[in-house]
Length: 229
Ligand SMILES: [Zn+2]
Image (cartoon, rainbow, N blue to C red):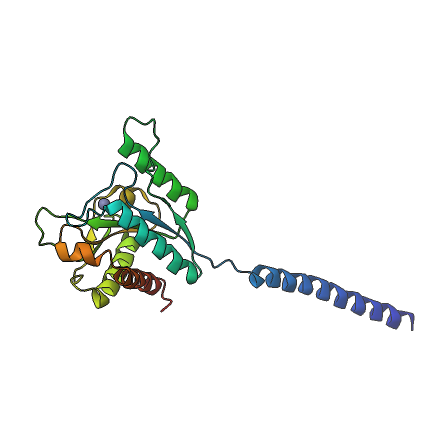
């Protein structure tokens, strides 16, 4: 009788140990999987700014820096709607260089590099407008860094998406020797959205409807890179 009671208590104790340890593991698994952090951070980098206006449209006088900012702000809106966290390198028309810097270009690029590094993004999109000595060149083209194999995949996905809906964009993504592409530690692309030196494209790039369509194509390209679509 005494042994039976003792055995019963041993069994009860063992059950409690199993419940306690098993329960602990169970709750630990629950607590680590209940709130997964799936939010992806991306950096959108509006090229130029301040005294550096970049390319200029001859008919309207529009600067590349103004259009880069407009496209970047709309891209931010779109990506946020899809749950991304977006960090912009530039949020207004001011330059990113220090006012006291003797070499403003170097100071500006260093600031961009630091913003990207602090954001620790899963990818970087730099936005620019192209220009050519004659008015003939036109069309959007995506560039990636030479050593960046993920950037190459991302660039091809975005280029393919642009080629589907943007007239004259029918190109392939190319290696580009740009500071942002060479210094970013995450996959990075630079999009030359179109040519301000081309009279038709200068006007087209400023149309809100066109800008919306263009940015949506960029979003679709990025989503297909992440295999969301
Ligand atoms: Zn530019």
